[in-house]
Image (spheres, rainbow over the protein chains, first blue to last red):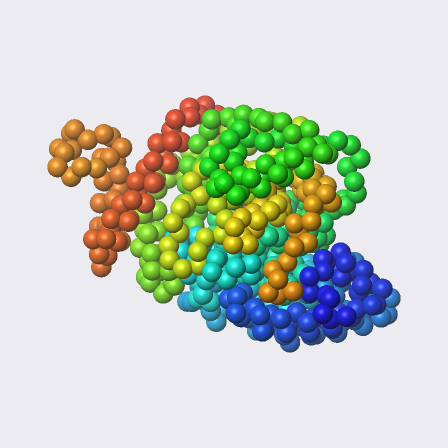
Length: 463
Length: 78
């Protein structure tokens, strides 16, 4: 059965494990083998956690055999972005050469929660160094090398959750945990043809995760379906005494049908700056959405979204890494431009940072009220497909208002695969919702995936 | 910014950017090449542009930073 397993969803694998048609040990061995053989060619793996994986898999196998089934993640392999702390002598590098041997005494809360759900940690996955917080301008910005896109090895995975994207897309693990400060879950999900969920800020504890920007950082899953993202969020959401920003609002994933016609908003000119193939895929996706939802164009208030989120991110990241920067360690990073480019951030006035925090409230209220009656707001996840893996980025994501809003005020969004551009490069559509409304955006995403099969396409090379 | 324009004739934003850049260069610019400093100057321009964009929105005095702060009470469980 092994040959049929590696592109199954968490939901499918969970049922096979529950009914004892597949064993957690078999799944762990399959993932470890593929991570070792394939993952390293994709620059996806920082550390293979084989000892821990086999221990957790044998525990899961024994528990299930004894009738103690914990739920749909029990015995399911996964990978964690290597900015999540892990105990057991497993290093946590933050993707940065100066930290490649760093050890932590405890697991991050997310890792602990997944262990409690019975999931099996098989690898620490690569990322752009320091989660991209120093302003890289090329894919080769990690000591593990640039993330290789499984759909086309001449293109990048996206970042900063590079390994999380490629490992799931290439069938190495059924799901992975990524982090997003601005685009780091949704971007790789789009570039790699996956479903990726950025939860509401505070929905998932950040304890044990590298801090890049305390008020922007979120943790969430990349998986093969929106449904799988919900299953994972159900396991990792919740309050945490170690993270005062973790919300005590309860979360339970609801996989049921909405039972009504949905309502989806589209900001005017949402795809105006997208390249042709991305725009065409988005328009095709809107046609599908119209089969089960009222799709309405809405006008976005004229506010400085990108300036606000950029200022918060850069000011907080500079504080988070001020000692690192002053000690001259920027020179030890891989991308040469990050040795000097971030120095400009020392020029950000305190008044600008505080103004950005004040404007965050204005944006939260105005956008929150505007989108409150919609199940989701749809837009292309990325205006551009995955860039070439060599050289500098030739074009920036010029007007990522959705990303600036969603991250700036902490709104949830899911990215779903919605087509292909030339050269087999996937395109993605993001569905963003109001705060704490993950179930609403996941319901729209599931309804979309029930009517399309993009999420069931896999890179032929790794089938 | 055109280097041959007298400072008094330059737009306020350009003056602000130049002064911030001078500060960054003086404090952190040792060993950087002219090409690297030029990139740093571009990033300083980004900082100043972002500030200018944010100041296009008028904020009421009562508009507080949208962030959470809870006084630490060592006697209370977190």
